[in-house]
Length: 231
Image (cartoon, rainbow, N blue to C red; front, side, top):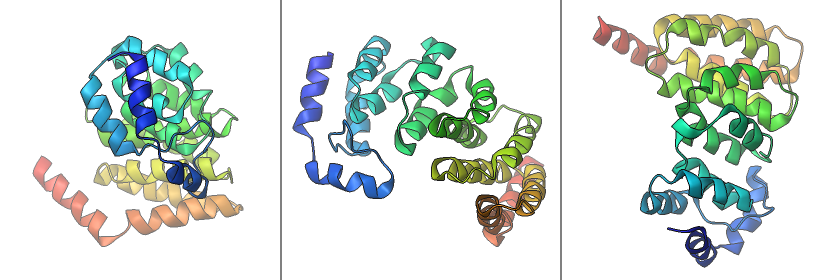
């Protein structure tokens, strides 16, 4: 499927009412057609893996073409330079998280970029660092606990960033690391307790929300059962 056909399909599915409501959810309505993500995923299945098309779609600059690009791109052909360039163009949490979930975490540079971007000043580049930590904690089954434990000082360092895009991703990363196994759960809880002592509203929110989930009965039971299965 060529870019012209893709664009025609997207414009045919445009929804002005959806665009109008995006700002309420922190999604930039600029250059958006209002096509819902499930429809984009269905179109991506129709397209299949097409890296060259992905590069063209990203260049179109629309919300929908960029989300599609993150789905149909080939992770093995994504370079650190492309990751930096795309991350630098994030304008909201949705495109940031879609790229991290659909593409960046599947590259061989995901963990390195999580560390690097966590120290960046730009709101959505920094968010991408913590979104990568969260999605890798769920999806990278082969990584050792040491990899994720090393993220906890970075979470602690940035927990006071009050920007909505950052603090929610910091919290997400902390929660997902703490739900990986019992050992990391204990370390994440200890990290949250330290964050709680920071004298900022953002840090207290990050810690409080994480502690409620990580110490809850369902999470503790699930981790205990997981430990038993592993023997």
